[in-house]
Image (tube, rainbow, N blue to C red; front, side):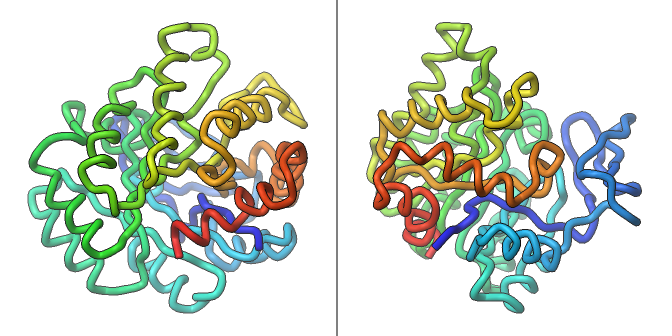
Length: 306
């Protein structure tokens, strides 16, 4: 079984970041604050990525299931994701959007979770596209968030983090360690393999921060997805040897049982097609045993997300 542990769907981009609103335009273009940027390859009509298109890509690439994540950049889409999961329960696993810094966050959480269909909550914390851009002083280890970690642990709901760029305000490795150790039955996933980049690797202090975050995978309740590694290497082309090397470094440190394959579709379709992305994953994992490859490509995600 092959599972994409990090994908997105949207009827239209309708989000907000620290630098402005995001809105769908046409032909794969969106507005982001005062800019127009390409999100998807050129496509007819309004920029969107409905579940039917993701399913076609999955079938084309031989991918069995996908975890549907959300965040402020694309905009809250709880109802849209829940409907997709309800319609294709054998293909999609849903993660809810929750903003824990909203005044009525606990009430919103109860309403969203009560609607059913969600096995995870995704907190997009990055400064550029996430909650730490909207709330510059946000701290994940703040006592006022303990209710959320407790509720997720009690209900068996996975907590997925995007902690943003190495060295940024959102890169709160210590806070995540506290959460993981305080709530040992809470399954935690960190997206993008902690976002290793060539720039971070050149800076010993930043690289030490990345290594410290990867070591969270030594805890029994923390996993990583490997989505979008190639997007952090804009000057490299297929087969992205640096992305392979970063993946190898993480696998050597925390093992194949702690890492899940993911793509971050549709945004990374500007780098590779979905089918190429799946083929690249197998190429980068070829040095592992067949059993270890199966863990990374699907079995870990099935264990974590259900």
